[in-house]
Image (cartoon, rainbow, N blue to C red; front, side):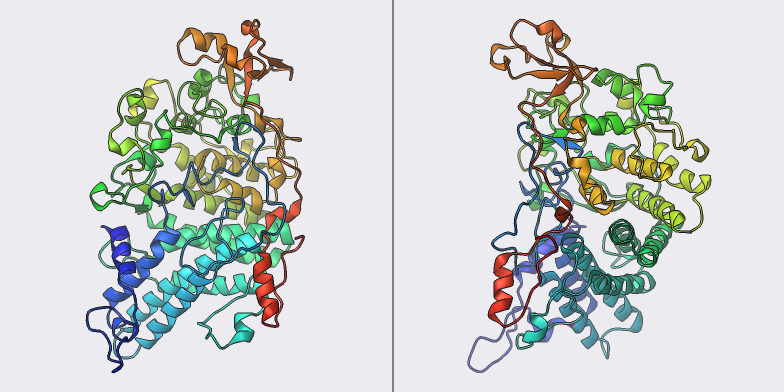
Length: 615
């Protein structure tokens, strides 16, 4: 289905007013008076939301909401030089009115923009107008659910970035200044409305629509609802201490995810790498929804190019992330029985860690990556082998055509088990081994592809609930429940470079993980034997221009700097060039400030827009 090409067509057909003095409606273009007449037009209008919510690998060189290149601000990644800072002051302006997704990388969400809220409400009003004489009851309820889903999605994103925001449940007229310029509503008021929208969606949206599994349906919506309600439930628990709200939202996350899982329509029966590098994700057993790319339709992206071993990765995986990967016996490296599990050079990591490590990273250090740990996750197995040749279009520039998974079963399962574990800490039913088996262990039991098996990679042993004691991981954050810690580890391994990490540490109230003053591993790469790498003709940084620049850290914490004559000593954890901690930050960075221009605009109209707390 060429869904995204339809979006382009749709936006080329604008709703126009009447242009001549006789005020006659145009007959050759869509307009508001003649458009709302059938379901196909509703479906086309709904497709206009897709590029803002189901972004996949985005398009061309655009990085907003794109893995690998957009989601690079978190504690998984490091760069050379000083690390990117958090926002330090309220910006001059933060508003927007276009129907675009917007992008604030430091918050992984949209800017201060209610255009898509208005569009959802507009959609709802037009659907209501079709209730009598055009839509049957079932169709009316489905399309109402579609519009309410997008409204709930947008408000969930806005709240995740700004906290309190003004809530609009209808289209507000230009003359309704008191409504247009009302101050923020409390977060709980907004999210309770979102909750109601999502409950309606889960009761009324069609299981399939339009003959295609890739149109928005109840399963896809439920999967996203599990994500959004998990975020809000854990935010309520860890930031606001509101147990009742946390339980309410977390239970909806469990119910929504459970609806998908219990359907039996998807399974973990294909290897991890096919999720990201396949030219065609149609029929993939783990993918609920994907974005299709097609060179013939000029719908392409650039994410595979930045996985091809040639293009640079200025933000690359750090040692802290590496250490979080579980060993293949299902134990943290400190307690693992796997030989060499405590060795952090890549050749050992590939065969001692969970298979997702090998599927995420190249086998040897690469200077194209800031930490020398290069990710080839978002390309097929063939692309990296073409290094040094002329890449075909599918692996080069902005002409990549591998499909992007937009929603997959692993996220649903991990949302489900985390929400259940969080509810258990709030007096809910304890997590069982059967719950672990249906989620984490099902994911770990994915098949391996032949290339991974050929390297000696094996599946990770199942997680045993009885083994999760306070001593299971000696480096566990002691403020985190041991089981929840292991669930969080599973998310970290599963979603490297994807949308989750910054959102996860924000909702858990763990943004301090990004402070290298207390976590130096975030400014380190893997263990590298530079003389051996030079001898093997893989990388050579033992050169005159690296004197007083190349540094490694020994196991005892000693830092050694290359001086031109101590090559034999250059064995240790790689320190990215001139790497330095980001500026100090405080808890105010959990939420974004609004712009000074927006506050002034309210004042000009005689109203008040409250600034975000702390700003």
